[in-house]
Length: 215
Image (cartoon, rainbow, N blue to C red; front, top):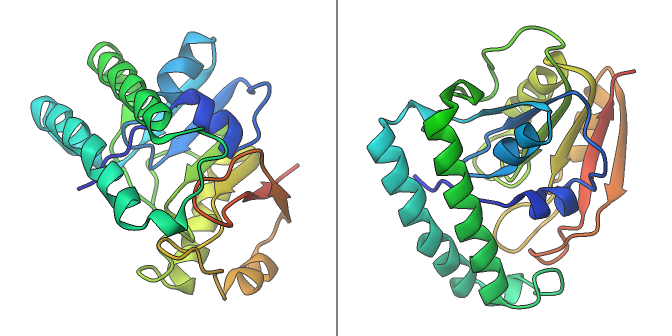
């Protein structure tokens, strides 16, 4: 299991965030520090991920082991990544290590913010969160999860949001190929959709997010 630790700064760029609403869900959050840092800003922030079912010691070990494992994946596919946003690999590693530390500190003192669960069935009530974020799951693994799974997952993200859902990135992992069934999915959704450029690119060509507006 790879439990990636992304930083608040990465979330700001990936999702083109400025001000946060009163409540936010980070779906399939892994070891990201976003929830901890959003909560410190007074936001009702919750993270959900299947990894949170792990015993505490095993979760710590998995997060720590995932840091070098993630860097190895980048090294193995060097031509598929650019360093414009990070500047260099050292800065990425620094952000990820700091994020892992912040996540592990917060999950130890505020475990109620970290809920075990996975798409397409989330353990939350309808319209629970104003903003729902989902990174590096939908579309990233389109070679593993088919169109019907994506549609069910998108509908579930919409169900638990009262205002907006943001999803990043919109390309397949590896070579960054476009997802062929994306246009069909958008036509099947009962909400307004927009594909929006973001101020972040790491995987080549992955500089857009999907915004679903409910109000």
